[in-house]
Image (cartoon, rainbow, N blue to C red; front, side, top):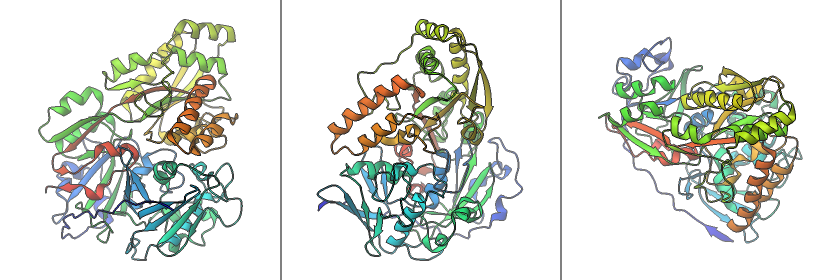
Length: 547
């Protein structure tokens, strides 16, 4: 066995003696400069009875509390606090143990054995064991359970090409003892895919609560209404679409957080800076989920109470093109008609880069032979040759100002080559439920990206929950599957280069730009690794509050 072991380094954080208040604290609150509770304007972060309260902003609300089935990363911010994953990946590509303290890869690279942390308990006091990991695999691969990320299981023994289990008992993840669990892969693979990408979305679920639940029950909201995880924060209360409150898990295995109460608030971009300035907001979630609006960036940098950082990252913004309603030549024309440099210079003021693929130019797997194609003359020729005269329905999610403003520029670019669009501003949940139907043609969306290039697999895999472009040709999905199975960087790079070239030929998505994360947080906070946020690793248990 080839052994990979990263020693777990315990976090020694101060444990505040607190009296946690009930859910009534957040009910019935309205109005504020930041669009949430007026309690914040009256010193929310002072807390009750000396609590250390920290408020983090999201630009849109989570659409579900079911960890298997979010339509975007807004839910992941919530899940990261309540649940744990086996491994976290940092911005530099190294791995940080979480529920797994070490792992071994077999010589033939078909088995990964994780040794789990000892003494971990669920938030209700029940012990966490390897059986919970095995059970989680059963839930995620159950074809009757809603799961937008099931495709990542396709590489496991006992799963089909969609990631669904081929039998009643999934064979790909097995508990060997209370503290050891094995992942069995169909073919030899570079373990980086499992450690970096698979584990990113593999939130471990409590078997003692969910075992025996039917798929119908698991797909309903009641099971998830009061979630129980192993994470650093315990669910307390929620005002749907507006805010959620979590309290510290005093028995967290890495040490109780220095934050007694974590408030997650939905804050529009126009109110972000004012909330940071007044102290109603302590930090932003980043990862494309919340950032300082560009027009406020200079003002944010001048604030005495804020730490500001412009963080380059692997995130990407893109246009979904419904392949069932928009012909290939029109998709190609759309891609050539969009002036990405104008978006980067005028809307991002240089704080970002134009894209030709979901991989940024700084990504190690970026195909260096690709370049941004801006050719409105050729785009106009394609439109005329197609005889195109239908207006396209263009969905734009609310909450991200640059994205909303980019839609106007894109609409103008398309009109200049003969493509008329009707912009419809919608919430994120409406966008994801509509784009794969005949009722919409185009939509804007973003992703946090990943150090592993397989991050966009579900976007291009036929039948995947996140295949928003309604792709029917399996070529792209097959390439991603082959890339995941590569045994070296060189092997994988060759395949992902081809993947990016085929994306340019089929054009189900127009890749637009990667904005720097314009991050800000209150100086009362320290020990934030904001560069890790894009890997959906907020590690709020390590944040320190100076109060």
